[in-house]
Image (tube, rainbow, N blue to C red):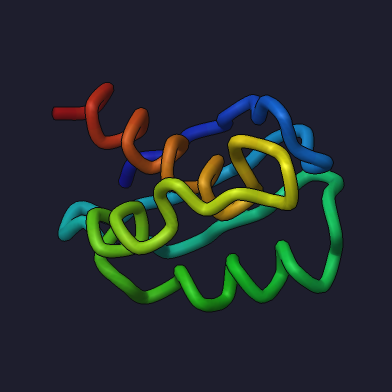
Length: 86
C-alpha cells in the first residue's frame, strides 16, 4: 500500500492524503480544506479506479484563472506517489 501526504499549491485545499493499493488502485483520497462538496466528489470518483487513469483524467484541469485545481493537484499527488514507490 502506498500512502502519500501531498502539500498542494495554488488551490484552496492545503493537503491531499492518497492511498494506492499494490495493484495500483486508488483506495482512499482525503482533501484538507478546499471546497467541501467538490473535493468530496472528486475523491469519491477516484476511489476504486486505477491510479494512472485517475491522474491522466484529472491532469491539467484549471480552476478559473488559476493554472491548477484540486483535481490537478490530486493528479500530481498520484504521480509523485507512484514515482517515489517505483
